[in-house]
Length: 231
Image: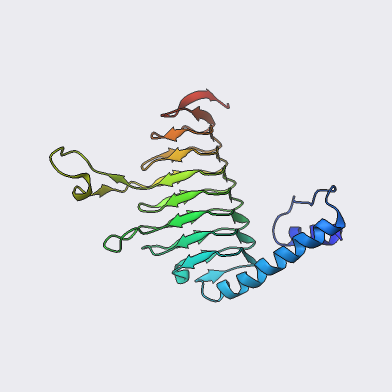
């Protein structure tokens, strides 16, 4: 059974993926039943998407609004209680082998007077539980990116230059966020508007990133600063 499962997984695009030998046959059956239910949910969701290139797994109680603005690649997984609001100017594009685990939220638009721009997610991207992506300016996530649990990304900032006016009447700036390929963002980190997180960099857990992160660097702290270079 394990060999069959490995072949099925690898045929879906995960070439170097194999099931742990320690998983018992009974546990494997439980997993397969769960995956089958997710595929059935995914079949119904795919009907309403803009495009879908392969199998889509959808967990329980997952809510996806404005599906026609979403394009997904093959072997995409949405966990339980995921909430996606794709209403935006350019919609959401998701690559191959992407996982958004339980309780993840993607919010493209907060108020309909000013739509968000859009979200692009590359291939082989994993977002752990409770991640939040606020799309106002454009958010781009490259290939082979890992988000730890409870990572937040904000592509908007409030203007507060005039101290005599309430912040909520001064408008917003939307520079956008770009997270380049090969990045690992540790649990509970926050990426703020206008930031570019450079290729193959690491953001330590609990960091608040308000400035660009150089490629191949390790940053951490509040606000995040360079700890050392990987090269």
